[in-house]
Amino acid sequence: MRKVILLAVVCVSLEGCANLGVEPWEREVLAREDMQLDANALDTAFDDHIYFSKEGTSGGRGFGGGGCGCN
Amino acid sequence: MAGAASAAAAAGVTDMADKDVKIGAALAAATCSLLGTAAPGVSVAADAEPQWDIESAFLYYGESDDRVKDLSLSAHATRDFGDERTLGLDLSVDSLTGASPSGAIATDGVQTFTSPSGRKTYSTPAGEIPLDESFLDTRFALNGSWSQPLARLYRVSAGLGFSSEYDYQHIGANFGLTRDFNQRNTTLSAALAYGQDTVKPVGGLPLPLTQMGDAVDDAMSPANRGDSNDTKDVLDVLLGVTQVLGRHTVLRVNLSYSDSSGYLTDPYKLLSVVDPVTGDLIGRTPATGASGPTGVYLYESRPDSRRKEGLYAEMRHDFSGKVLQVGYRYSTDDWEVDSHTLESRLRLPFGSSSYLEPHVRYYQQTAASFYRYSLANVTPLPDFASADARLSEMDALTFGLKYGHVTAGGNEWNARLEFYRQTAKAPNDVLIGNQIGNTQMPDFDAVILQFGYHFKL
Image 1 (tube, chains in turn brown, blue):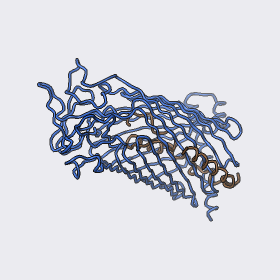
Image 2 (cartoon, chains in turn yellow, blue):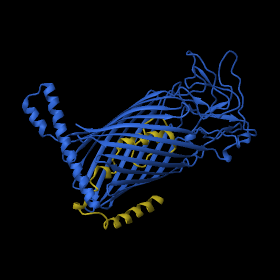
Image 3 (cartoon, helix red, strand yellow):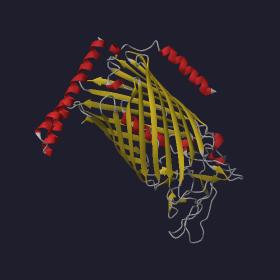
């Protein structure tokens, strides 16, 4: 049930998203390397690996951190 | 003013990209001449775009009190085949040494344990938290992925992964699909990953909640061990939305679900068995002529399934060239480990080609329902129990600073220094008798030092 509500929230949010965003010629800043959500992939992979082996929760951002006998 | 700065920055990026092409072409030409390739090959290479983008790094991770140390070398390489088709390769080698808390409690006297192999014993001085000194491993991991457009607005990716340690193997596959909406301002993504891991501990799998026995010689098998290996399967599902909120802001929200089943116990973790009234360790005498534990220690036992659900949100915002990144994760699971993680980075460019990036992270979790500081000597025993501090109530704080410099050739080298402090807690309801007000949790500090080089070929 909780998942259905979450899905509904996501759908309603998406409806709202149609009004958000920029025109293609306004992407100068967004196109910069340091504005990419996947920038610093290696730092993130190291961090995920460390926290996966030292804490009780992992994942969320992607699938990183798993496949290790350290937890 | 802000626009002018951004335009200047963008122009700088273009300059660097041009230099990359030139440097890449020069390198290719030099390689060709070394290999004795004919002149036409050189002219083709001179026109070629750089094709490999490689991030490489060396990482040192070291815990206080001579606990775990990890030296790691990693490379993340992507190759662009044109038309937005990319190949990704990740290679990683880790070398782990040091000691790890076994789960047993500190006591007023010296404690002796049988090593995981069941062949030797080791002792822990009075008043100290028992650490398993035989923590030594080399890990090798390789991942490959392919990503390409599927149709207009759709993108598909698929990957395979493999990792190996002397007592642990992992194979995994993943598949993802994204679709752009709203002039590519909104992207929906769905991804699925499946992994199968094989656990093959030294000395065999301990039988859950059975007692650690005396050390034995090579001719005999250690007490209370079962099969030599077991497996676990992990299925992960991720649903995500990426939304451009404006010219300077982008947001990502992920919902995740993870289902693990199979052998989820840590074969090297122990529980101290204590008097149900005083909370003191129950003593044990090894057999005549044998060496072995001087207290009663049981191997831990965890459920054979775990379901996690998570929410992750990340935002990047540009302030005139400075980039603020804020992330939050909430996770909950049927082991009752609920966690909150809050993380932020601020990238501060300075000079013409350098940046500083402070980083802070706060993590907090509740204890698993079966977490015990120790186990009371009563029958029946619970079905599941673990004294692994990673399943206790805890919080952790990370502070770090990264420095990066882009070279004239457009490559980047960087260095990162971080401090991590973990504080585990044992509330009074998991303590017995004398343990109250007298606990020692295996808290630790760690240093993370990383050197990276990002270049193109």
